Image (cartoon, rainbow, N blue to C red):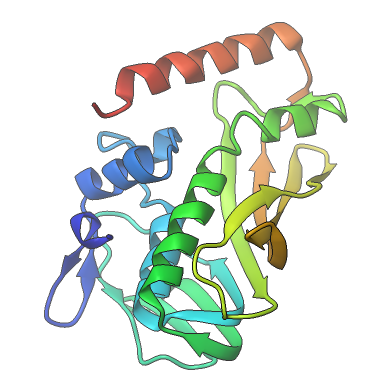
Length: 233
C-alpha cells in the first residue's frame, strides 16, 4: 500500500519530493503548498510518517505521535526496533516521537483500513473544518501565508478485535492568544456502527488575524481551483 511513496535503503528510508507530493494529493487529498514537489520549503506529509510507523510496528491500543522535525527529500529516516517509546530520527535529529501502550495487532487488514480512513479524515480538515472553526471566534489564518503545522495526534482503541473501522468527526476546539493558536480535531472510530475508539489531531496555527468574509471566500475559491488543477488523473 505504501511502497510507491518511499525508498528503503540498506539502513534508512528516504522520501523524494515526488513521492511526498503524490501521497499528499493521491492518498490524503491534502493540497497544503508545503507538500508541492516544487515548494521552496518542501515538507513530507506527517500522515505519511504516521502511516509508515503503523505499517512497520502494527496497531497498539493506545498510540501517540509527536512531530518534532520537518522531513524533506534529504532526510535519512531511521526506524528503530519497536518499543513502548521510540524516536524516528534523521542523523542526530528527532523527526517523530512515538509512544505506545497496551496490546498490539499486526493485522494487515486493520492496519491498511486505519491508515486509509485516518489519512482521508486528516487531509480534508482544511479548509472545510478549520476555517469555520476559527471563524466562530471571528479570526482566520493569514491568507498570504497560511501556516498550519501538524503538531501531534493520538488514537485510543477499546479493542483490537476489529478489521475496518471508519472515522466520524467529533466536536473540535480552537484556542488562541494573539497571533498564535491551537486547533484540536477530534474523531470517533466505529466498527459496524459501534464506537470502538477515539482520537485527536493537534495543529498549531500562526499569523492569526481578524476575520474577513471576502478574504475567506477568496481563499476557499483559490484552494478549490488549486485542487482541481493539481488533482492527479
